[in-house]
Image (cartoon, rainbow, N blue to C red; front, side, top):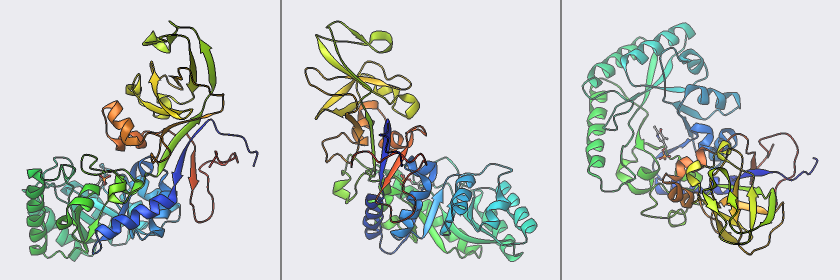
Length: 395
Ligand SMILES: *Cc1c(COP(=O)(O)O)cnc(C)c1O
């Protein structure tokens, strides 16, 4: 340990993550819990978050890509794991051999997975996906009878076992939206068709975070929360994280790289979109769009520096941005907190989302690989994503 302070970091509170899993499980007490850890656990770090979720009672892990699912296995995670975003020629055989449940949305995928099962000499665990109305992946209802019949034939041939049937909501984050009932109806019909084809799925599931929190009738056998597990409200118009018993897991901060007095009329950052209104102090935050700070935060993103919310002054650059401290004092090395749980006076990811015209999902997920993740509340083993031995930032 060389104890060098970090330039910037994303602190990941695994105690909060475990507590969020417990809170969500309490909302869906009869359903199994699939922790969705795709996209590097929404930027929080896939393996440490998956481990913490399993410790808190998740019995399934969910990823978008097969490569993510395989990475979980490689890291030693043995929980049931489902992945859903396949393209032709994907690593079907590797997933079958790693006991990963794979999603099939069409006949091409069923052909590829049965061929892989035959080659591997093992039964593939397959979950069939219906498009209940999202218009993204999943079989269209017209193709469903044929897909389920062929899946049943592959079961009879010993090549696959259909372990699940599932769908994904389009507008679960808008409670009362008419699509919700429509999609539940399509899903129930699809389940009936699957049953009539002779399939006996172990898990039927449709609920993402908003479905888990606001639609008990959509819990079925398993819920698949992602963003809520990271302590972000999927329905901020209805409730804050605290109102749902959730706590944000990620805090992004950095240390000021420069603090200096400048005269009035001084342009700030590329394009001089901001010009100092009078003599003032400018502080330089060493995080930019290469680190995932949206360029759309130019002139609008909130940052806690020297005890107050400041606003990004001028444009966010690739590696850095500036805040105007007005008459306030600060020193190089002082902390600038972009977002966190909010109870230390800092903005939240939701505040950044509003400032940038996006959703908090994107704010946390886009935090880049140059920002080291610093894990707190880990119950064992390694506590850092990088191995340079630097000290943890101030607790
Ligand atoms: C991302 C994703 C989830 C989790 O969604 P949240 O809104 O983050 O809870 C669940 N299911 C599928 C298929 C997904 O792609």
